[in-house]
Image 1 (tube, helix red, strand yellow):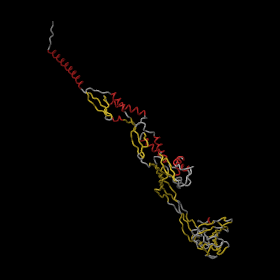
Image 2 (cartoon, one colour):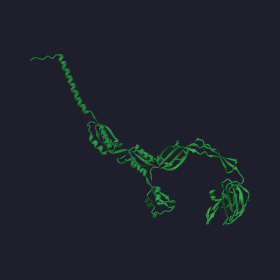
Image 3 (cartoon, one colour):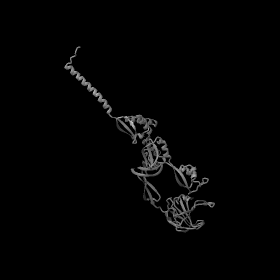
Image 4 (cartoon, helix red, strand yellow):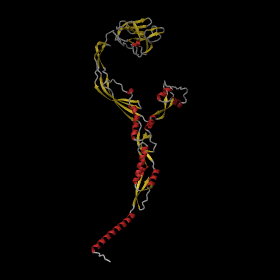
Length: 469
């Protein structure tokens, strides 16, 4: 048998391979031991601080949550969604056993899941009147409440003499008279309303009881129209009304719907307004009294006026001028006014022949015949000349008693009858307003009064057409 000789080199090689093998075996054995000894991380899931279960990875729950949000979003037209899942909490857990159950946690969370929607609550004076999906919807809804009152009706326009090139310029703002708040909130599905429903609720308002005092000319239908309330409502609220008979001063109970919001509009308008030229009178002693003469024609001016008009729910509340600026100063018309009195010649304009008179009988048919003048009575008994003129008669005249006739030398005469005393003589020149006698009851008279006539070119006129009583 042949013997193998082991050389020193071969021995060294065998030792090296043996050492390497031992190292590999040691590594494998220690690796298995390390793997068994190393802890794994698991995650405890809490909802509202209550333990729900343990999962291997929080991302599994987050992905499930996102899927549920997406599903509900599609169902409710992509509304802004929230839920109690926003209060989820994860805590890492070292464990040597590594127990977890992803499916059980998802099932438990699904049972506890409560969805809510982010929405905007509309409050009026602290009271909720509706809930809509977002602030933009609420703001648009409130603008729709204001819109009808931002169009100023034609009858509300301020009239002026503005010409075609000076059309008024205006700006209207609107605000609510109540305190309006928009609050972000979260609500259960079904609490969010359509904007149209909330708008109708605000505009329709609520029935508010008021009382009304019946005025002259009122009837049930007129009052119903005035307050936009059904006639049957008035009858129901006021059972004492029988056969629709109401009386002036009676108090009625009305139930009137008023909107939940009152809109106050403030309109600022700028206009160019014509300024009248005006007249300045200059006394002229060379012109006869009563004669006027235009010396220079005037010219109107212009001013810029800024008005502020306030309306509440379309009804006028106030209107004021807040600024005026003169653009063109007017030029006044200059008129000379005669002051020269020509003795015995009238002006053609008549003054009252009695102070503080009361008419007791007018011109025209009376007792089957013509009454050719106007009868006056007064506590003031003095009789005054109605215009400048010359006395052509002063004495007793049949039917008139003591009587005075003045010729005004311009086609007019005046007659004063039934005097108790005559204070002028035939031929006297008198001025308008001169005292010529005293009221009495002479002639065909039934009491103390003045019978006064105006005669033009021989024809009796109605004195009240020439006098202002």
